[in-house]
Image (cartoon, rainbow over all chains, first blue to last red; front, side, top):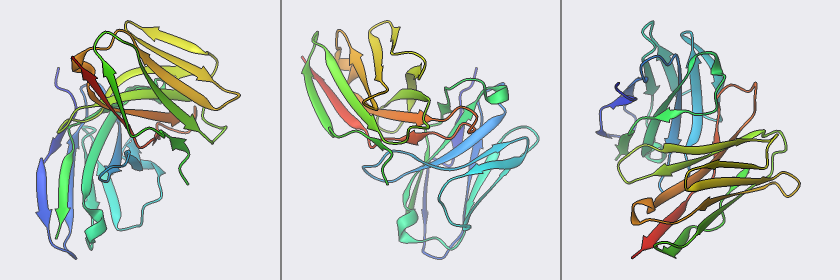
Length: 114
Length: 113
């Protein structure tokens, strides 16, 4: 049973560029959340997708957007990259109906903006 | 505004002894709490959770204690093993608030031989 997978593993972009990160949830999971983890910090909630819609959003600007596909996989898009967007981006999936507390995390995508 | 705080950035414990990791929160709306463990180059791995209707939850070597009046929780690991060396994150959520988790900044645990 594959866990949460993310691609790519690492990415280097230049300021002002756009980036797309991808996530496949754990088998049987339909809810995907994205988190940003800056160096020395805990993960910060960006947004959550369920039934192909954004259901909740954290305190992130509109430059951060996402999408969920019918197979429950998800993308995170960041436009007009800033140096401060350099971080580890984590995807987490959870069980149907949002009745459990646990979220299962992928290994993350390390984004470096130069 | 840091709603979940882990005030100890690091902790060193001898193998076989007890490790106690602490977490404080300020938002009284939080009604469930989780601990995650993270190794370098891996995503956080779920360890144990507790609902606000309980004050203790055990799972093998791991026990989480919740003191709602003090807005404080702790994770006890007994006995500590070298493989427990990792960063431990405390997280909190609100039932009915979706699956949004608010994380602390983490505590680096080192278990020495």
